[in-house]
Image 1 (cartoon, rainbow, N blue to C red):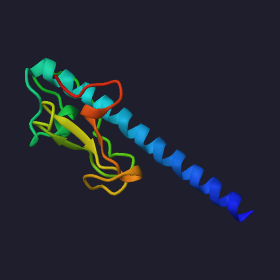
Image 2 (image 1 turned 90 degrees about the vertical axis):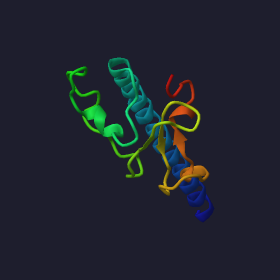
Image 3 (image 1 turned 180 degrees about the vertical axis):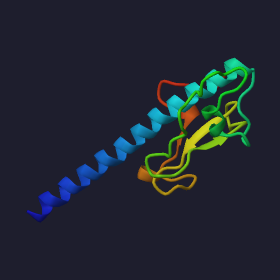
Image 4 (image 1 turned 120 degrees about the horizontal axis):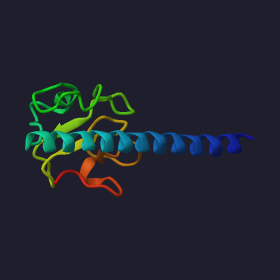
Length: 122
């Protein structure tokens, strides 16, 4: 009985971790799309100082906010925005469960330029 309970616990944990990672990928993809809309309207990407918060504001070129609010990642940490990014004009990062750069499994970083089926920037 204990062995079965242990196997179920391991499987549930894996599913929960994957669910949070998938949610982070989806949120990063949404934020990436908003950053691209910002670029199309302004001819530039938000600076690191402006961060993702600028996507929640109206401007002369953007009459409605591109996102209602900048979400926390599924682990409760803020998404990191860097412009320029390491391999693209910008990057959006969720640092995983530990909230720190690097890591594996639940602690693995999820980065906008490394999303499956997507690109991060122009």
